Image 1 (cartoon, rainbow, N blue to C red):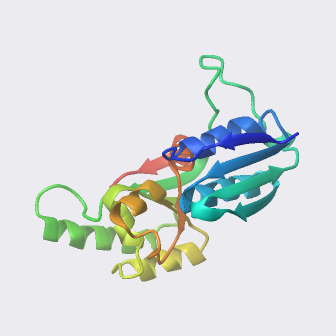
Image 2: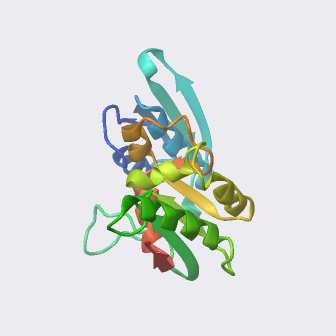
Length: 204
């Protein structure tokens, strides 16, 4: 029997966390959400775990996400100090993660800060190896917009294999969820796991 999770109205990343915990115990889970970004995040979680995912659209912006199939390979031991915690993904000493929290770099002059962040993103293309993941949150999500002056650099990084995660709560706040030019809408669960598992973490 499928476990049903009513995640309507819950803020990121709670719907994803509840889904992940349910999948640790049940092979079939149905999650009910009222937010397109939450639905997309849960769909990606199911796909990442190698499970079958289907979405049933209902009236009023409600989505029923059905996830089925065992995910034994993805199950990990529960952290002893907190039985409600979900262990983050394996630490990778070789991984490089860049977390960008602003569309400016540094404090002081905003105009100079914008010049610096454009230069920083462009310079990432020269790194060898390239960053494994770039995370955008807070006003940093604006840099991943279609009209951003660094969007061509981000597209090149993405094409070269860099994963770009853009905070969905932040794009919702700024009203730009439908205006991304690179990367994918993500959630704080994936962002925290990626940062925690990074061998090197850069925060300009």
